[in-house]
Amino acid sequence: MQDFLSLDKQALLAKKEALQQEYRRFQARGLNLNMARGKPGFDQTDLSVGLLDTVSSSTDYKAADGTDCRNYGVLEGLPELRALFGQVLGVDASQVFVGGNSSLAMMFDTISCMMSHGVGGCEPWSKQSGIKFLCPVPGYDRHFAITEYFGIEMIPVHTSVSGPDMDEVEALVSSDEKIKGIWCVPKYSNPLGITYSDETVRRFAALRPAAKDFRIIWDNAYCIHDISDTPDHLLNLAEECEKTGNQDIYIQFCSTSKITFPGAGVAALATSPLNMAAIKRQYSFQTIGFDKINQLRHVRFFKDYDGLLRHMQLHKAILKPKFEAVLQTLEQHLGGSGIVSWTKPNGGYFISVNVLSGCAKRVVALCKEAGVTLTEAGATYPLGQDPNDSNIRLAPTFPPVAEVLQAMELFCICVQLAAVEKLLSSNG
Image (cartoon, rainbow, N blue to C red; front, side, top):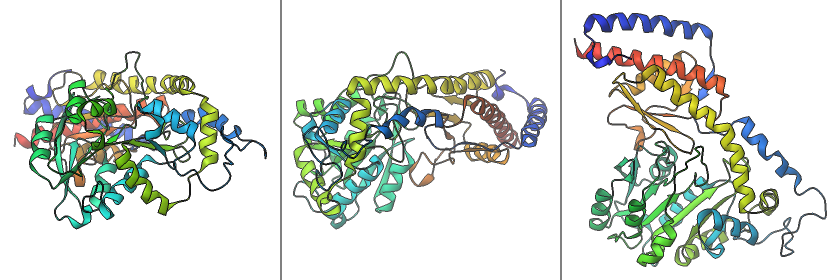
């Protein structure tokens, strides 16, 4: 494709007219497609239907140690599921707490705990004025929503292919005791799809924050969600923190939301004894125990860690063609255009696209007017404010491949049309 930035005004006008014709043809189709959220498709949730039959009789409800899973108790979760999550997260089972179906809820609860009661003998965050959180950008809108809800100031930090800018992170956390934490999606990050480098993980483990109650919120949501035959490797933060004597600095999260059922999975966190004591204390007031029947189902369905990994291969077979459809369409219709760039992740749930500065909102609006809903432009930045109005998160997991292809063909038309409009406006 010819570089759009090299076109003169007449060529741009001709390009605009041709693109508008193509766009009107899409409008006439009456599409109603949605690529706004990273949801598993029906074919993925179908993979786990057998889970519902693993506890199927009135005498089939006991855990390995004889626990009656129908009743109260076992706040930390079934030992066998704690052991399985320990393998997933690379920690000992004693460091794992199993919760309900949502890791996002557990993250919210953790921030709430720090706000109301603090950790490690420090004052609650709510009693410390002007507290702040570091937010790698582009990042996960739900993380930013939690900090916004609690009135915590958010400081954007640039992210590259190796992870957050650690020079900036180190300088900020070492000099400002008001900075209490940082959000991280370390493997196949949302939305970039990058995995933190070994050096980045080691530098996180070696942080020496001014605030004694600073915590890394390590949302390892996509730790086993590979879609490539050459998957990324993430260094074990827990092990690195042990080496630096920084065991209390992190709290790690994951769930089966994109492994079994998003609305009926199981979530877990892993952290040090000091952090665990504060979190367990809050949960002891909040609940007498989470859904152990569901925990038992998951243990029996996967059987062991190898069974879980085999299950993820089934997900990979479904997701890989969808990601390939997105990347091939982008390359076919936008490669060499000079107006857009995109990531090529080896796993996770998203592809990040940067369009011409000032065009993201226009692209999303054009897509919506023609029947394709995308994540709102700006959602990948705190308070929805992308300073360049350029980043768009694509979530190709939910629709079938045929619909992904339709949506992406329209997306490419909209990217070009928005760029032409912007270039013509800039040329007067």
